[in-house]
Length: 107
Image 1 (cartoon, one colour):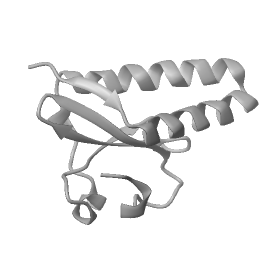
Image 2 (cartoon, one colour):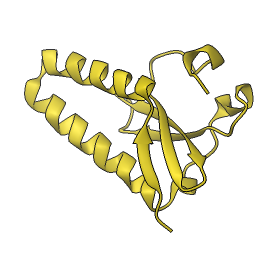
Image 3 (tube, one colour):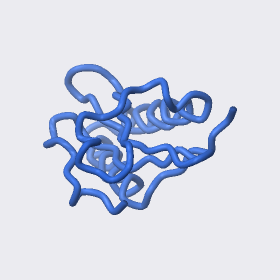
């Protein structure tokens, strides 16, 4: 079963913001980071249930799942939800940021 992966406006904004921040420091690393992140997110189209329910999910009316991208320093948390045949990316945020709160998203 194949799912359609799409990004919320909030996630798109966070993705662009993170990309630009990395690009200021290392232009070549920014493109590599973006491409790897997009490839990783696209893997959700084949099996979105492979990642666990996010600890923050209980704060939301809908189940939120969490995929980690990269390790240790520079790790990003990718929050998403599954809606029938769609995977909606809700947030792309550095792991160093505070946990996801209800007011961070529009659901």
